[in-house]
Image 1 (tube, rainbow, N blue to C red):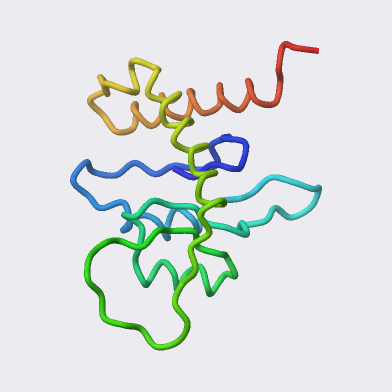
Image 2: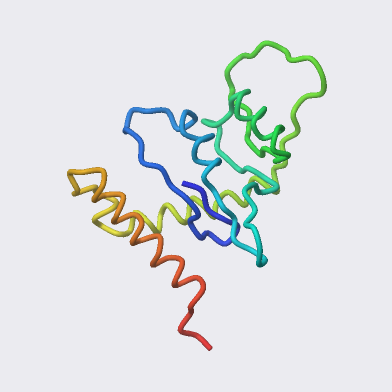
Length: 145
């Protein structure tokens, strides 16, 4: 799932439970449209904040190609040294990743999504879409005036 800086979900992809998340990162990022000013929507953000599971060279090259700054901590596994400058890790920026963790926590508070009662992926995706649209409406159309 991809969300913006306010915790509003932008896009999600369902995958098998045993599938690696990194395999679906690039197709998911290709489908994102960032709302903003009138006109053609932006497709890329300035930063990509992700957890250690997304630490892969091909994802970092993807970010370089589209001028995104990857903020991904390095995994603790031994690596071959790479030529050039080492990747910088922006810890204060990485702390903003709690926004998506809170969004996942909110999403799993919905009992039907958290426990996955649905048998078909199509009906589960419909419930996730409904919950995400409810989140968007609460974010943009508040009852407070």
